[in-house]
Image (cartoon, rainbow, N blue to C red; front, side, top):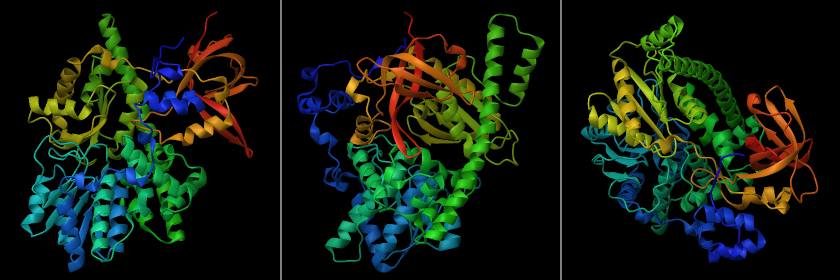
Length: 607
């Protein structure tokens, strides 16, 4: 049997929160799902825009709006400085669309990650001055750590408004206005807003101010497609506030009320907008937008989200599709190399532990040290670097390593591929597991060794950092020491389940109802169930996928299931019963729909 952790243990209606008991009379399963996710009152599931937290709670928003209002009225040149990921792209596009409609003189600049790095740096300010001569700079999805960049702008008399959501433990830069729910003195109760969410709030408050003053304005809620895309793509926690934003953005796309770029990207992916789900923001749209910033320049992605011409949208979407294919190829090569390094060094560690290391294994270890390819010996993290790795893909590779090994993973690449000397910079992207706040772990290293890390920032689950190549080994040692201080239980992966389904839940109606019952995602986990099934038949597809026909008690028809990329070495072909961890899915084939289980784990049940 599988070792699973129940999210919610009660199976009786009268044990559910009182407010959920009427729902339980209709669907006990759905009521249990909500209870497991901390829902105790029906209003926590409401999706009306009136349920959003008020913008006035955001510290700094009043001054930011005042400055923007004055800038629009006076015709001041406004420059939006964005970021090179999907959150930054949607934030920039949102600002451009809304401010233009309000009559602003506005343009945007996104740092090329390969030349300028992240944030409002002095170099970016100088480029902005040279190219656009701005009188007001507005950052989106960055800026909370940009003290030097703010000072450089102010030295030229430029007003700076920072809108950001990243964590900081330091004083905010002395910009004329700073809006960030995670800044130290902000009482906004939802800390889960991503960059585009913060931009939405600022613009919504600005639109209201101008509407009340009978000035040119716009209904900012018409751009919630961009807000939804950035929120999911940036893995924002889906608290009530974010679920409302994503719900309305998703509804707009299904109804065709969205920017042409999103429709063109869906066309490239072969997806029907009317059938779009929340996860498609992260798995379909997000990677295509992100590919621009990873492989080229994010300006392509932003222009795709800004264009009002369908043929231009299609052309830009095709460019993004090609960049995404290139990204997949580069990622695949890097991932294979990373897996080989992890496997080789794990073998060396095991052999050394047994005092049976061969000359060949010693040679691998020496070579890996020479190339600065390292996996720590405590098996509590994976930290890798190679001179020829691509900076734009390291975050994805780190994420894949984290998923496959369930360890905090950091992947480094040269900041400049033509400069790989010991004193040159390398950039790392980190991804973490539950229980390891990766940004705070990196900060602990920085506090203990102030000269080791040049820059860092991020969140609990993802972070970025820069250091000199010669400091790599020292960083690995210091990071290992931080990980060694943590409890063993943190590194034991827990697989959660929402428990068994009732027989009547195995239906197309329930699968569709479940998918649309809420916005599922990070922080509001998609439903996942388990059960013991009888195996009626099975077959292997393309030598790596397992197709099953199953029977469940009190269900009168076979239930189809698919297990992608299953491990053939652990599958017992003689099994008659299996314990399956699965998600409900609807399979479409030749215009017909059928219920299908997406298998996430499987174990043979011994009689």
